[in-house]
Length: 199
Image (tube, rainbow, N blue to C red; front, side, top):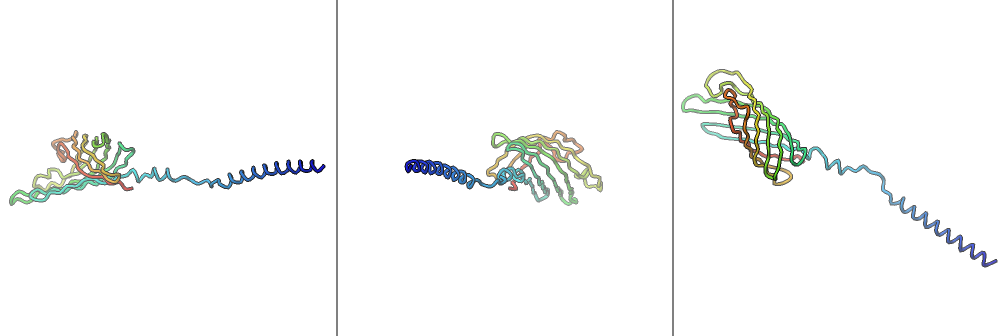
């Protein structure tokens, strides 16, 4: 009889230990479960500001022929090799010839462009630019009529990005819509400038 009680006690302890062990394991699993949180790393990774760059070019020459140019622009980079953007242009030209009164003119306008980058240091560039200018600006007259010059430029050149934050470029473009009565930019068009990433 005493033997049977020992067997019962042994069986109860054995199954009781298994139950305790099972519940303890399930408690451990539930205890280590982290609360569900929203992963923001991908949101930060695709932050649109990381794809935006600002920059442009400028030019300055002072003397008998004075030339001032400002060309700010902003670009959105869809991929590492393709971007599009808009720009603004302002030019001031003044020419002095001896004792004659100086001739000066103001040019301004805007543009849209697309660029493709390849082989690390090369860039293809397509741009459409509108420029407002004074008719017969190179003549000393009082004609204040202003015209619009349409310029479709295609070309490419050197583009280098020394770091993730900035890039420099030098482009040679051909102006397909250049006409004698709208000869504002001439041919070819040379552009040099820089880009800085906002983030």
